Image (cartoon, rainbow, N blue to C red; front, side, top):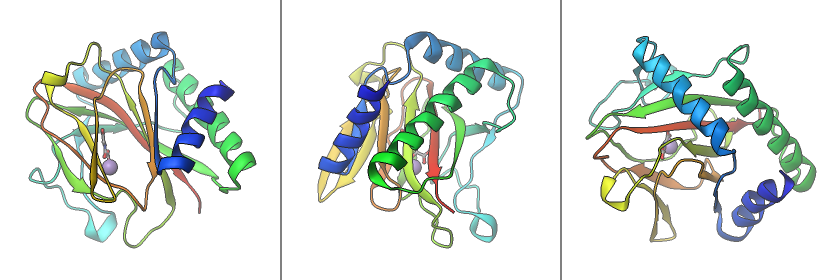
Length: 197
Ligand code: OGA
Ligand code: MN
């Protein structure tokens, strides 16, 4: 696992963002996808909001995904396996980069066909505890023609990333503006943040 941790860290140090293929093995990705689909079928997912507390607003002109938070006391095996790897990753990140991460938060996210998330920054204006963003894609056989790209805005450049299953994207939450372009099919991911607070 350390090679994959290093891939994210080295990429981030060199370019401010990193991607890694098959960061989580594909059996785990398949279980996480089934778990998300079950949550959706059971009516557990809700419209995502924008901002925090007083500035929280639900606004489908800004984002259209439905989400389900991963609880820290989850007993779902795929979520436990996911969180164990994330925790090992940030322990390694702390050791190698002195980042002081002491928690994390993740939600399952589903973008129905046509949904998007406009350009934004993940760190809240009034709360800086989100240090790093970490996205994990759960989609099988994503094609360039399916849309739903993640676009990172980096020094005037646009970095286009397809939400292919198993791919992880990692970047500094206060630095990189990004958006999700409208998807032409259902788009599933786990989005989350490494926290210091
Ligand atoms: C987010 C987000 C991007 C993606 O949830 O904040 O930017 O590719 N998601 O799912
Ligand atoms: Mn975001």
